[in-house]
Amino acid sequence: MDKVHQASLAILEDTGMQIDHPQARSRLHDAGAEVDHDKNRVRFPAALVEKSINMIPKTVCLAGRDSRYDLMMSYDSPFIVRCGTGLTAIMDYQTGTYRNATIEDQKNLATLVDGLDNIGMAAPLTVHDVPSKTADLHATRVLLQHQRKHFMNLTMGSRNMRYQIEMQLAVRGSREDIKKRPLFHPIACLISPLHIPEDDIEIMMAAGEYGLPVKIPVMPMFGASAPVTLAGTLALGNAEVLGAFTVLQTLCPGNPTLYYFVPSLMDMRTGGNVYAAPENLLLYSAIIQLARSFYKVPSDTTGLFTDGILLEQSTYQKGTNLQAAAIAGANIVSGAGTVDGGMAFSPQQLAIDDEMVAFTRRLLAGFEITDKTLALDCVRRVGPKGNFLEDRYTLENFRTQALYTPSIFNYQNHSAWQQDPRQFAEKAQEKVHNILTSHEVPPLEDAVIKELQKILQAADKEIT
Image (tube, rainbow, N blue to C red; front, side, top):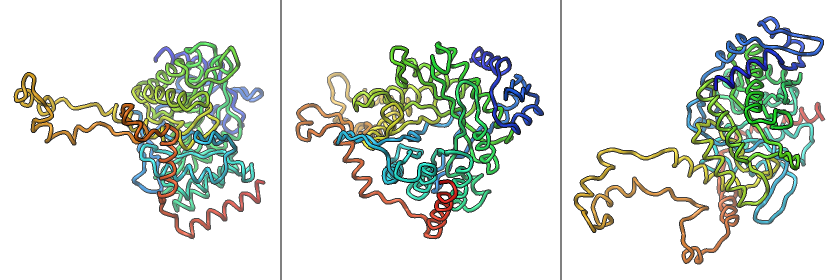
């Protein structure tokens, strides 16, 4: 980890980053960076980077509308799962349809997230049946109104971000309340390799005004926008994370953030983008170790992305990736409901992912070894050729030692399955249908709903 860290510091000091925001470059220069304003190039001394890492808060509150859903994230907090973000299409595994996402799909996603116990955080789709320049604002309105959990938000620019903050103010009430318990956190994008556009700096600064946690996604592609070695991709991506940290902490000292490094692999045979190869798992594990053990900053990584569109393949890849990330110590595992390489959302896949998260949580819970659970008295009573089912110890303890019980997966043999021979997608769809038809999200007050609509109408009028 230290070797990777030193390599990243060398990249930032020798090569630097392109920062397209004049004010940000001036502030970085005042903080000790070497700046070439003609080329928009900033080189970061190691001391400035180290100082900036130490300014990041060690805990961050990602709050829900209802405090029961508040998430207190730290580098060693238990993992939670969030939906994939910005997905453009809907894939229905039961009907086989693949189509553009709509605002009704966004509402359904919100209801499902609210009703699924193991999905901790929501996210917006990219919807197609509203004005394209304010589609992010329409999705924000739905997520604020139709579910109660925290969500990671997308914005199409700093102007849109101001309207999103207005919406959050309408629900939360005041700037101070947003800072204490933010309902969503935005992202400001970095383009690999080593480039932060001007408007994304504006997004960071807007978030900083309200103390909103802001994530800077770092998404280098092995062999394309990153070196064609895993170590080189790791060093470059880590440099981009540390450079983004330094920019954010220079402009907005002490503002909360997370370590958000999401690499992908270029298949050199096809030029395709790969998210679920063994090499991805190696990189995810290294990233989580760096965030957790070296920098002690909460992390977010895409452990639930998958390649291809076959349900069986997606479920296998997601289960493998999820458990590897969870065991490595991830704080947020993102991509629930995601299929087709991060392009589409599947309601059935979200229900399946929810169940795999429950399974993984049970795995991480381990088991107790105590005098009571070692059951020596029980073994003595039963003895050779005995029957533990008949011993009182089993009666007294079987409820507390019950097996994890799935709702979509099952433990049935063939003869039992024949009594109810539904396919995997059918069982997942039944769970989706039950939530969408019976789960009720407590509504916002009428005055708040009207204010959200008023803000959205003003945004549509100005921006579109």
